[in-house]
Figure 1 (cartoon, one colour):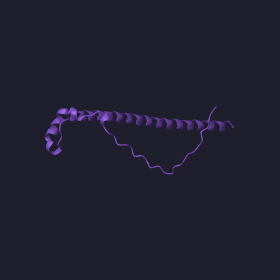
Figure 2 (spheres, helix red, strand yellow):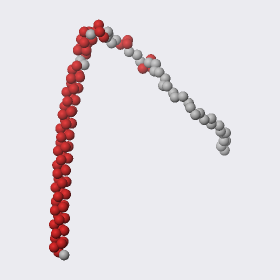
Figure 3 (tube, rainbow, N blue to C red):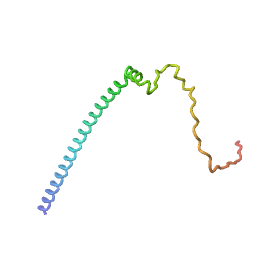
Figure 4 (cartoon, helix red, strand yellow):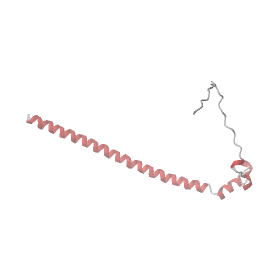
Length: 115
């Protein structure tokens, strides 16, 4: 009986050791993946900062002014003047299209007086 208990205990310990090894391996893989994701996020943030700087460089007012002057014949772009702007209350917005009423129901009832 004791030998059976020793064998079962040994098998249990070996099973738990195998389970601990598997969990350790999975944990290491998850840590590696998290590190890889953090690196990717850092790289993408760096690329985004570079793209924002490039966008700011390309949208310099003096550069855009030169491009508008060079392409005036093709585009017909004119400089913006303060008189071209309006207040929001001066803009007429279209009314929304309301759906047609179908399956109308007449509601009739009598009013009750309350004491």
